[in-house]
Image (tube, rainbow, N blue to C red; front, side):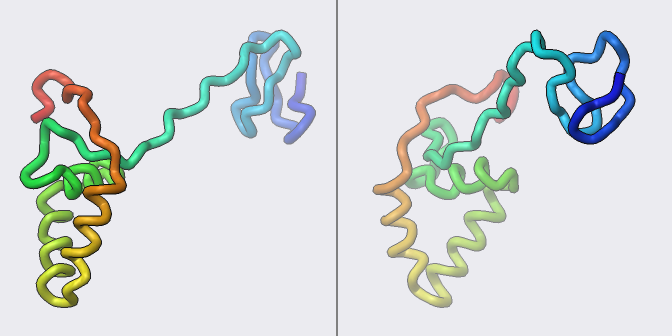
Length: 103
């Protein structure tokens, strides 16, 4: 059996094409969509308002790096203070707890 979209050779037991992801059979269950990241302020990791921790979680970088970059924006160009307050107001709070042993 071959995929009708890309022509990849499929096994009889395959539900989806390993090459392009198209369902191989009409009775294939719907594929789970990956969870979208949401920009939010984690309450459990905040120093001031949690804005930097939220951006660090969103971009998967260390929170210290984000804090240093934000401080440079604030001190060198000045608009970092305004941007921080705007993000503080606009970003929703995240009250979920971190995984055990994560922090």
